[in-house]
Length: 203
Image (cartoon, rainbow, N blue to C red):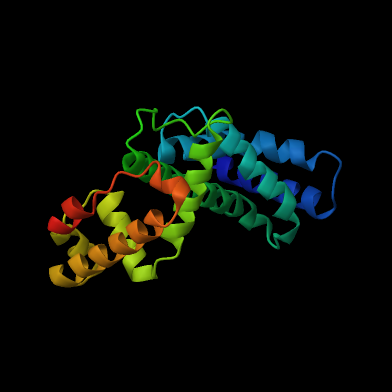
């Protein structure tokens, strides 16, 4: 049992040497070494979704492109973990935006499904809506996300952001007004969006 850490460190050192010397099969070795780790982290973080294999591929593409920057053999595993968690966070943000878009347009489409190529209008609307949300100031965007995506009440938003309830409510109202105003000026989004300003601002 005491040999396992040493053996793992030896493998990591050997892999790091292969990476830095651009050995012929270092990518295959890295995949074999870390596939279980990457898959497990993504599965625990995001749950059993169909896109997990694609996300595993994204992680390794990023690792293969940047592994030469790793200076220490002891950092190989932690670097892989860091990339994996960045990919997981990016996917989590994408899911929250998708769910918000689905809530706004009131579509019966399964929220686990992206707008497909047979629905280019919905896909374009999703992209434009995401850009509008990104226009918000950081404080307002945080309040907007907590209220509309995380479905928090004002007291929870205030506690999370460390502000008063009146400040939280003001930020949510301002963010909602900005988003809905921008949506109202967009002919594409106006075809989809169901206005929820009254119910949101009344809370």
